[in-house]
Amino acid sequence: MRTRRQATLASLAAELGVSRTTVSNAYNRPDQLSPELRHRVLETARKLGYPGPDPVARSLRTRKAGAIGLLLTENLSYAFRDPAALGVLEGLALACEDAGVGVQLLPARPGTSDVAGVHRAGVDGFVVYSVPDDDPHLLAVLQRPVPTVIIDQPVLPEIDRVGPDDAAAITTLAYHLIELGHREIGVLCMRLSRERRDGFVSLARQREAHYHVQRTRLIALAEAFETVGVDWSTVPVVERFEHTLDDGASAARQLLDANPQVTALICTSDILALGALAEAQRRSLRVPADLTVTGFDGIDAAEHAGLTTVSQSVREKGRSAGELLLDPTRRTNAGPPSAQVITLETELWTGKTSAPPRTAEQHWFGP
Image (tube, rainbow, N blue to C red):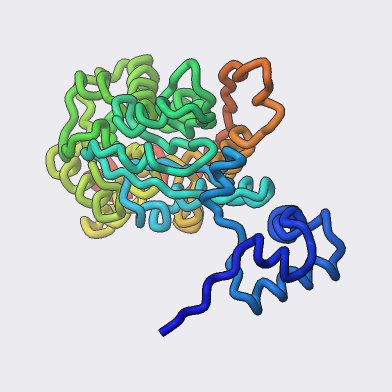
């Protein structure tokens, strides 16, 4: 059986009696043609079965892929499940929409070392979202001759970065609790390394954490509470590798079972804090009368729960990173620009989950 040969750009141009440039402009530079001529080109292409210019050939010719890569060291579903990650993705997509480019997601599960996906990604630049400083995928990104912007972590002096001042933000929260009178505190934190660990965290592990944001927040908390005489080495800190409500609840359960005297749980994310609230309810602990719980991020669910937390605009993180990466004025013939850091504002939300700790009399005789 004979099959019809697929039309090509040249055969379409011959059919229309126009140049190949005219056909190409109908797809790639429509402003160069009248609406009538462009309609005639596209309609004839449809009838002849011409699929349009080969995007691979075009990218080879122009050296532009028309997309940026978003590297996150999580499963792909995390980008659409975690509220903070979803906000970052939305903001990045908005910046890309304005620039007329696409986004290619490059998920890389923690603990994996296969960086082939990074090397073969057809992108014009990378946004790296919150990875540890020893991640092999980050190293692979930095080996590519394309611009890169980091969101949150790690801090690399020569690479553009967007994120809040984590130390200042968590310190503001710490002093809120200190002023309320809390000294018996516990901390629930997100993962500190690429290797799976769940449980209590030593002081050395806190100081050596490869996740810059978690390390910074823990160190800042220690410095704040040590100013009022709290020995940080005695403060229980529980780590969770996964970032879900169930993990927040199980971390709170582990910490409170071992340290029932704790009057405040400081969580380094809202997700962990919301899980801790669920565990407090399961234990019939009143929040904040029996237990203060705080978070970090300011996601919608935290606001609805009245959580005391640090609010940051995660959508603005993504948008700012995208705009910085795609800003044509920062890439000139004079060479790459010096690294730029965009520090985003945060705000302490004093919700209904924080209050002074109960006195000894209240423990014995009620509120």
